[in-house]
Length: 483
Image (cartoon, rainbow, N blue to C red; front, side, top):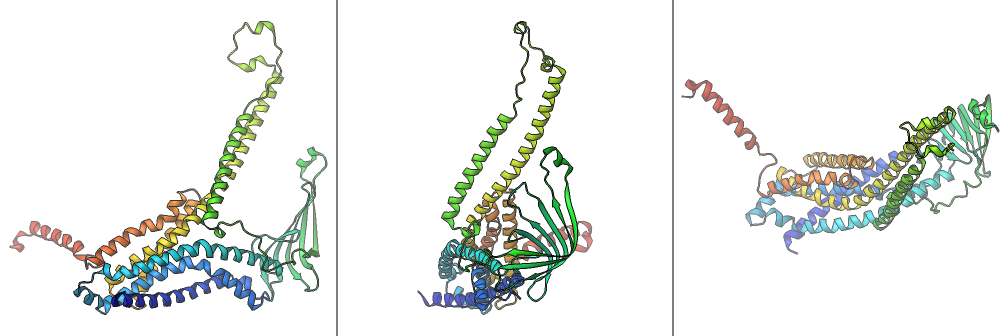
């Protein structure tokens, strides 16, 4: 390795490491801010909090790594151009491509490491992170109840509008659905203005005290014809105590792992295997539904009094004329019932098929994202290096502005493409790679202009045609002055 290559690699590595650490710390703070409501005031020890942060760190890498490469490239080559080191290189016959050669090798190695990290470390960390959050929620019942959504706690689904108090045990706007083992049993909904969670470390019973509320209880009649009346029981209360048995919920091992179904927890081989199963399942569902709907569209045969002379006569145009009025009514009722049933079945199956296709699209996006992060490192380098050589500014001023604008554009297009592909607006391949396809021409253009020592924008190409146009207008309308 030549002295120039060592110098460029050392300069880039120092800048890259510094930028990476700073950005990583900023994104970690953002993660803490997002989950502060789950961590603060829940009596969690330091080891649990450190584990929580360690498992959440790898998911930040796909955001931090491309941005660090982009910013480090702009700053490194901007400093070289600002200090006229590029001018000295070019006077010695060293081109921009020659200066970038060693760094291209480094970025290639970094891309391989990024792919390995996305394929192995991130799925494992995501797997541990989701299970760790689940187990903390089970170990801390007050933490298991999140605001604004239904939460499974024992045999109840509990939703609260707001939590307050030192440990989040004061509840406001409580809605409870009591789960039933048998479908035919009564269903109970309890609503209360406020409540309080009372727990004891020595007891497996969580006491929920509700104030100023009422409950509804649906009653299922034994007779089918009475079900249309929708009978229910309603009662109000000033205070009600619900005891929730947490004997099973509290038997929690923080190393226990049970959740393993999200696409973010799978590597490439597992994603391909899962996608194969999901596609086969979808195809079988479509074939099964097609065969089922074809069998259901037929009208059941109604016995007709057959006469010997009917065979000799030509069949009438109106087949209903062969039946009595009562039989006609039965046929029309059956047809109406079949149509309604088929429409409902089609709509239900269509929604189910859309959900299955959305799940497939999510898995495909997760598969392509592992390759996108590797390519993004290359892309950001070939945008940042020539851009730094063109603007000739190092430090943390103008380079940060350009880096943030470019990365926000990349991240926005990437997020928009993934969401659109998951909803079926485009293929998952295009959704995942759309940001790379859009910014690749920018990388090619910047590299071409930096190689030919052109500025970021060629103002002469814009101003010259305008000047010529004004000159022609002046010569046409004011010929005397031009003479």
